[in-house]
Image 1: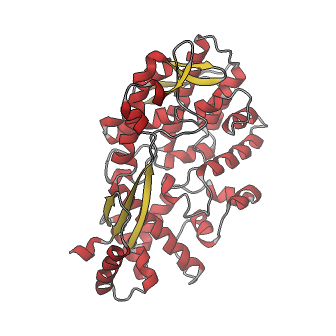
Image 2: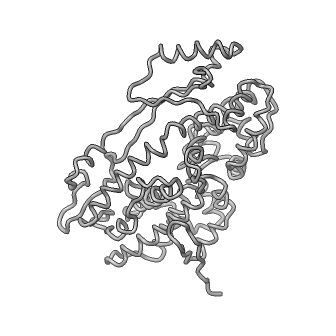
Image 3: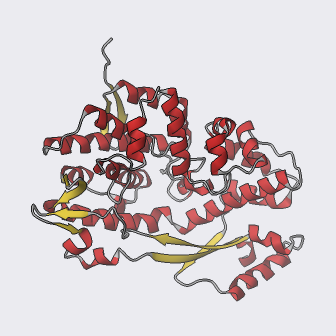
Length: 411
């Protein structure tokens, strides 16, 4: 029976076509359907109420842009087989399959030193077995082990279909217009030179806007101080629940999948060697965490219940963001004021209510995957090719320091 292409109506791009059976099979797989239950921007909806789109939305959108990019390259004489086209689309479709609940917020909380990229690759290998090794080439592209390197650049680089989709999509759903980029034009300007994905000269201004939009979206959306506050509170809630479960043997309410990760210290090695770990991980989504937090708000443990109540009611910690590191005296002063309000807390327990750290904004970094502009003869790094001095400045890593604390101390 001949395969009939399917369409998905996407709010950003309109109709997205699914032209190959394997893509539809992957999309319908439980591992991928789980992405419907994981928000793309974690807790950002606490600042921008419209930011309720999911990892599922994003993966479909990135696949659509990959399809467009492949067609553009083909039209410019780049030889791409059907097998390579399908593999590229599978690779981008599954690039976020390893994200846990609330995306980046819990990456190193429910598991230890395991990135979502690590888990994505492990799940891709698992899917490859289930699909009788139809993902072999997709995995090679994802890992940058395929000899035609520009395919990996389309999946993961400083100008990939992942970034092109999430900037435009996140801008759409948050309403932050600074993130709007010329995705169509950028894709139309792509070409391949010396096996590298590059941008034609006439696309340089679209790339400049892309880099500036990326910088603005990080400060205005991804690293917004209220989002940082909510994410830090969520991390502390999970840390406390793990401590109560493991050290004090509390029988906290949790779904079976979450219970598994609360009770066990799971590492990257465990994911690779223990099928039970994968089976529990793919059952986890945002709902497991939120259902537990709602129940934990009535816990007998003062720290856990207080954090959960404040989190649910959006009574978030006050967050100060600045260019210099906070002095020890500043932190100590807040802790001493906290002691008067919460005298039952021990010195070590203040870390749940006074949190400090830093965040980095890298709009354009020096790496092997440069964004290169092609004038028909030579290739030049965007920072050198552009006459906009701000582009060179975007190479600089900007670090800001934050201090989150229970604002009850200021009342």
